[in-house]
Amino acid sequence: MNWAKIVLIVAAAALVFAIVWASVPLSGAAEPVQAFPERWSQSGHADTTSVSFTYWDDDDPPVIPVGCAQCHSLYGYLDYLGLNDRTPGQVDAPAHIGSVIYCYACHNEVAQSRTSVVFPGGAEITGLGWDSACISCHYGRASTVSVNQATEGIGVDEINEDLTFINVHYGIAAATQMGSDAAIGYQYDGKDYVGRYLHVPDFVTCIDCHDAHTTAITVNDCAPCHANVVVYDDIYDIRELTTDFDGDGNVTKGILAEIQVFHDTLFEAILAYAEEIVEVPLVYGDSFPYWFFVDEDADGEPDPAELTFANRYRSWTPRLLRAAYNYHFVSQDPGAFTHNPQYALQLLYDSMEDLAERVTVDMEAFTRP
Image (tube, rainbow, N blue to C red; front, top):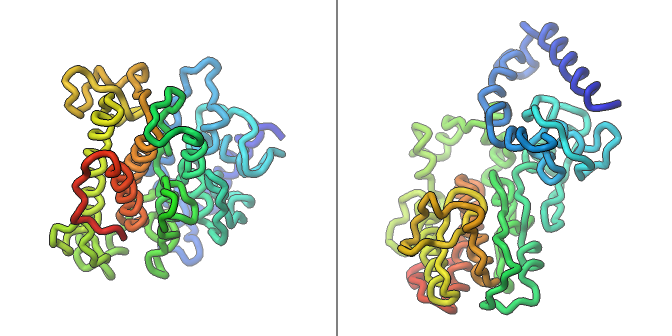
């Protein structure tokens, strides 16, 4: 069976499904089943204009590479599952452009029977059930293992022109949630890190908190335990940990605020190390490859003319690369404060502590989880 036939089968099945069930509620559901496609259409998974699905449209040939197809194409994800006589757990060939994450990505026999995912770096997390579909594309593309491999045999403060920034990738909620069980953040030798964050018994999986079709969070689900939550923005003020990690005496503000203090302090330490030890200043921007040489003003602020691939930073030492990796890791999970706040704080603290061996870092008041 070829991919064209699969697409026709999926389309035909969807049409029959819609006709037969147009007015029949799904057993046990509060909504009729025909509402689900409409809800799905509101999600980023259905956005046909998103760069996540259109980035390769103008390539020659216009196909999605093997390394990207698993998460940026329906065809690539089905390939990863092992459908159509492909090898399970890997993508065997580039994928066609023109798809998003349609219903069939999750609603097929193979996807529904999976219970484990192998993360970058080799860690396998079992007992996942439905979560495996979400995790397979939200677990990053690098790990402690890949950072160690890249820096092996290089002096910790030695500039090496062969080192390049290692991008953990985007939407890495599962990487944060699994903590040291997956070790996708850079974990320093000799340090202990928390494992999977299970929240509370009724809110453990991705779809316990996120709508399975829109991916949105319903604040009414948070409110029974978090009395401060009335509107969506209130989730950023949630706090359960009572330790004053940043040492400012305030243990009522949201834990996100403490993560931000650590994050900002690490950034200042990275700038100081690059300027004082490497003697080559750098800047961080919101476009790949994220770290760039600064211009003559060396102000630490990204100017549009600086944010080009040709101007990418190329004066890495292992110490600087590890810290920059963790800074970017936390940047790429804006929900780290709820996915696994202790893991985020530990990664940031240890990165600051390592840089503090060479530059001054004001973290005397900080406490490591």
